[in-house]
Image (cartoon, rainbow, N blue to C red; front, side, top):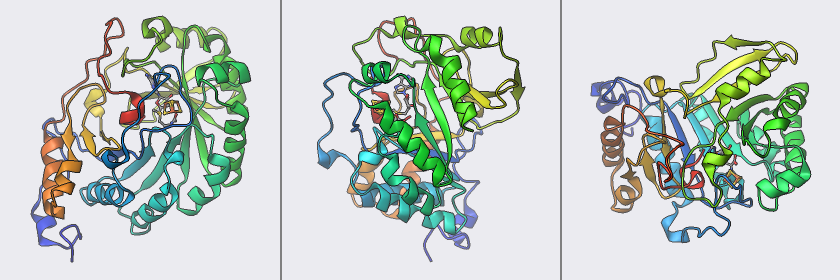
Length: 344
Ligand code: SAM
Ligand code: SF4
């Protein structure tokens, strides 16, 4: 029997798993498996990113151990992210291994956020591993604009990836970052296209994470303003889909599809936050918008037992801040780390 088995007296003695100081239960982990990516989206990465030396990045075994420790502490939903998760060598083995927690019922959902460029190759394997839904990031259908926004990407690969995912039976949600000067005018068309293919869409406001070359104040488009614009020609009705995350969902009457708005800058969504993030270096961030960090890699590499690791996770979650502190008006990024390091 391991300390994590349900029947273990150690588990039975503990209070409800991973409840922070504000009474929020943490049940959702986003785990970044790499800081690398085959694209260089302008709002996410600098053009010439310096990636981490391999030794700093958790091995596949360490990633599995860490994810499994969270699952033993009550994580019900695990999202694999990056960087681009599908460029990590061996990632399908990791996902296949983690799917054992789906089989036992310990994990409710194993999912992935991807840029879609390698989905054509991996969609079948993901479905086989028990992945049911994935998020694919796509800001534009226009090949030229896609190439510019991603600094060299080919939108046709993403579209082929989405096709493959749907053929494999995966439910796909599109994430599109709303960029005032680039895709704002195209968004209604992108939403219509997506809903026509039975894809949900979530629009994301740009967040001030990490230094990039572009001026983010310039790119920022308030989704409150965008929603008002959409409502001038569509009927949007709120739907009570509560994910514990920052997204609010509406149904678009004219397309029949679902549309989410992630507005970290215009709304405070922290009271219901059920999530934490672990970077590919094993740093636990209990809040996307703050610099709080716990080095779980150091704990693991110091030879911690499973109990020690669980205690380190508990301690970190106990310090989860009440809320974030984003302000787009600031010249400096609110948080120095890039989204590609933290994971989306
Ligand atoms: N490479 C994968 C992808 O693009 O889906 C996963 C990692 S990516 C960092 C996760 C999400 O973060 C993407 O949907 C991306 O658009 C979003 N993102 C990256 N930088 C952002 C920023 N500064 N503000 C808002 N969203 C951002
Ligand atoms: Fe890569 Fe995703 Fe960042 Fe784009 S948003 S550069 S695809 S990690």
